Length: 185
Image 1 (cartoon, rainbow, N blue to C red):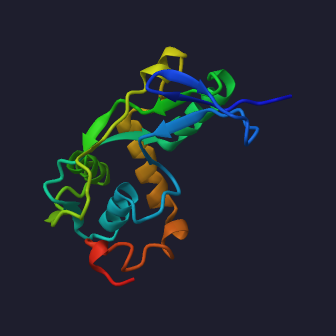
Image 2 (tube, rainbow, N blue to C red; image 1 turned 90 degrees about the horizontal axis):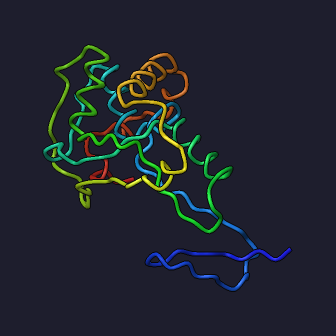
């Protein structure tokens, strides 16, 4: 059987030489959060620092926007595309729940009941103002996220608080540093 790789460029399907003999589908996703995320990322870092009664660094003004998606929703979307997606197509995967970094951290601190741990620090170099995707294409096929931001975040916070054994050896001084780009690794 001969497979043809298809790409969609400027809304035009292009059949290409079957050089790699693969029939592929692509997914692109917004920011994931959930259990087992490395402690350097915003959400686990905020949870861990709050647990340790450390200030939570907010880069710049904290108004950088992210469309956050719970990791299990992302996994379900990938499976959905494998089962129902059209080969050669590209599907964006997002929750449609945009939050500023300040809103995300404030919600974490509300869940943990430690509201006074925010500390604004200088913005990191190259910090994007907004990450978001239009996922209407996958939603038209029938997929939608099961977790709202508050529910997914509550599950995530509980997981990190209950699974210190997993992150404790990873969350060293460099990983938890408020401005890690300034360190000499």
